[in-house]
Image 1 (cartoon, rainbow over the protein chains, first blue to last red):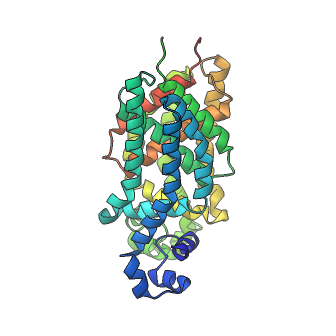
Image 2 (image 1 turned 120 degrees about the vertical axis):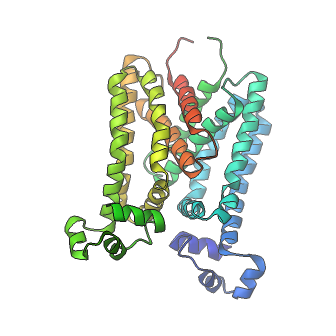
Image 3 (image 1 turned 90 degrees about the vertical axis):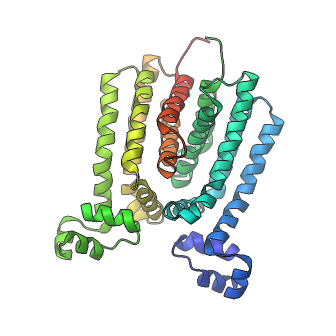
Length: 186
Length: 186
């Protein structure tokens, strides 16, 4: 996994070969295929491992702060950490998704984490709407607004880490969106 | 340009070669290099050509609707068109940016359109703040919130066009963010 990660970072997903991963890890191809059916599967394992931290942080914020608007605002604080962890990784993930978009057999696995976060936010927005703290057309639309903003922040933060102060921009953008989502008397 | 676009769409940016572009276009390498210094420069030309429509639409909305919040909301309506135009193109653009992120000589040119839109929205938010219709920490942060949301919407819309109704989600997300940005008596 370490050798694969290093090679993916250095030469990209498509250029990396199983032979080269094996050479770097000092293992045989037989040993490799004993653990992983394909190069794609090592990649998905690395992705899942990386996202475990994100999953835990999101769940924590939901548990600690049951009010949906406050919970959302606090989640902004994990953006800089995700951006930092993703540095040197997201280009590979992007490349992998671009690759997956051309390969239907990969597509379902590649999009699974995205679906998971989408469902996480749909449930969260549903709770907010039920509690009367979130106002939106429906929970799906509210969730997609949050997902879109988070994805845009992450993409820019990873592609252009020095271009802006992503801690401040993440916090303020999510505060503004949350304010737009918060039910209030007119 | 047409041959390059077809080849980029089919085999991706990195795999496409100048020789193959020339073969498809039925021109000599000499003729190619007479017009373009490199494969990258054909790509940047294609990108600029594609973005011309976006630029015009944004400028139109600003001219027609001087009120910044209303102008923003109307801009949501061009998202589906950008997504449709980008179909089969954005994967290549992503790949190009991933490639550019590893190549400092390409980076400045690759990020120029991004900087342009950032400046467009910084100016627009500055006008809104000056007119008292936009409330935000500052014009840069407000602009980055808009940019982030738009980028997230575009990325998802192009990667997963059938996953959601991007016309509805785009309009509603931008409405919500705009509501969060709109100054109001508390």
